[in-house]
Length: 400
Image (cartoon, rainbow, N blue to C red; front, side, top):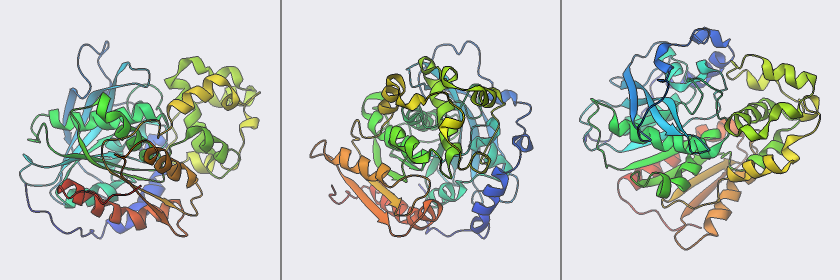
């Protein structure tokens, strides 16, 4: 493996957040959502195979203003994963490689934060367009010499609704992206090398769930560490937190994601005429979800609140991170003034993981006066430093 170099940001990375925000406010058609590229269409029927099998792949070219570090080689892939109900599904994603020999490179699976629910919001498409919001994270990892596996998540890019906030499904998508990276022809990545996962916000919940599920669902993916910031870890309590708030659009996306993932939830049966109209609209929003639906309430769209019913409560509880415990050490962080996700989401996971046994090792950092977006900018580099030591084989200091 090539020597790990200090993390030095290019001049473009400083403007990545601004470019991503502006891109997110553009109509979805700006990135080609009006006509789905055939690459993202899975074979019907899907046919036999195992989670992590690559269905198809192609080289990924990088256009636009923001790009990965020079020399990065990218692949777009369509691979097999598993839904929250245990059914096989095709998911799209990307693999990014720094230059040099890949035969001993660790693979880091990235769970991206909220990108929206339209197919044009998929990271594999935004990377190609130069508008990926989480490029900074990916670039920091690439500069350290790691291969990066990025899932688009179920239904984000591929046919069907995005399983937004459904941690069980998204965690499996993350793990299977790592498997797919190992299986991807031409990369030379090790089939049994070191792995880790990192995510923020929705991605924090995804990688937390991935850590819990890995010992049983993906025992071949032996994680060296888990980094999760501002975790979406308790969907039930988070829904109450968002109702009537600035980020109500995120709650709307999650309602659609749960309805698509669990047909028995029958979201439409709870909706009033305004809600039914909204449900039938084309789901092509990216980050416009937040400004388009800010300060709205469930009661505006529903005859009765589905979140208070037994079927919804049960499925939300299934997707709570902390029901199991990962084998790997974890680094969790959250901003004290987070306006999008209550910090109780992350401290709750630490409490539940630490309560489950002597093997738990969970470091937690509260970022003083940190709100949602600045917290990631400030704390993630420190978290990646922690992750790098785990991938180097340095044991994590005991924490819990």
